Amino acid sequence: MLNILLSFFAALVLHELGHYFAARVCAVPIKQAGLGWGPKLYGIRVSKVDCQLRLLPVGAYVQMDMVALQRRPLFQQLFVLGAGIGVNLVLCVLTWGSLFGALNLALAIGNLIPLYQLDGWKSGMVICRRMFGRPSPLVEWILTLGGGAIAVSMLVRVFLNV
Image (cartoon, rainbow, N blue to C red):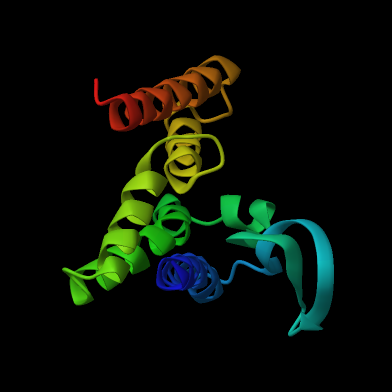
């Protein structure tokens, strides 16, 4: 069980480091990076990045300057948003057949779903805004609700074997 938790945590951290380094390459400032969710337990500032440890040891995140990201060309925006998935896919291939490889594949596939705040959803928003030349609330709501429906249907399929 400890192996599963540590492997999952490592896969999450490496996913977020993919976003971090891609943002750095594209000169997108990082505001905050954290391990876990919920109330902050500890924080330190390193190279203009507020690093935090949070109470619930599930997840990791990198918070970028979204205005700076949105000013980048479409390719760079998608590169930054997709870098975490890319890291997970590379790690999956390198560790194929292991628990760590399976967890990385699951994270990559899960993040491709256009579920609110996941990488697939954020990339979908970037593409829709570029296609329409502006934010379109109707299209964005359709993407958000559609992504939720896809996620719910996948969970039903997995857990109820329907």
